[in-house]
Image (cartoon, rainbow, N blue to C red; front, side, top):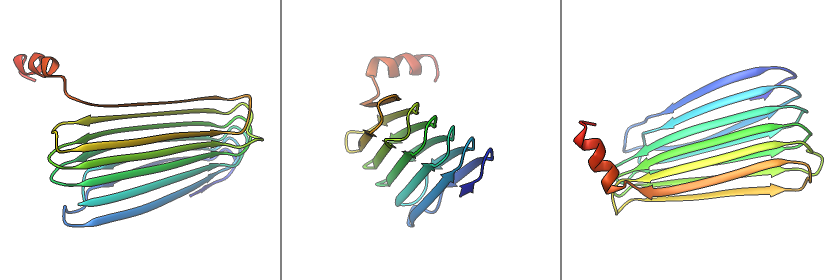
Amino acid sequence: ISLKKSASLKHYKLQAEDLNSYHISNIYSDLQSSSSYEFFLLSIGSLLSRNTIISNLQGNQAKSNINSAYLCKSKQHSDITTEIKHQLPGGISSQKVFGVVDNSSTGVFQGKVNVYKDAQDSDADQLSRGLILTSDSQVNYKPMLEINANDVKCSHGVSIGELDEDYLFYLQSRGI
């Protein structure tokens, strides 16, 4: 995907193949000055799925917004890998990944933000949350920030856990 100056694109992907299949996908986006790329991925299919999203912010004030969610069950494995490259000043990026694993399944998120030396005044945010429904399932997250500029605003946060039994009882007692 190549977005020229001031162009914008909203891109949605539903990955829902048969549970006996494998899904490997790579999406590359190059963003010029003041362009905007919004991507949403919902991954619910395949025994093994790997989605890689790379976004190059090559122009001033370029914006990249990547959101994804996965639901895994029955020994599924979902792997989402992202890399955002802030190459020039004023770029803004956001990544949000949410996942739920159940019944011997695995969810993986590897997210990297790279702020180059010339990319002053960049703003990058990364958030990932994983919910484990059974003890035989697992979630593995690896957020990474590589910052080579000194005037930036970058953050990342990770939360992985199981359902709280008291909270679950509260919801069930109200019919939820």
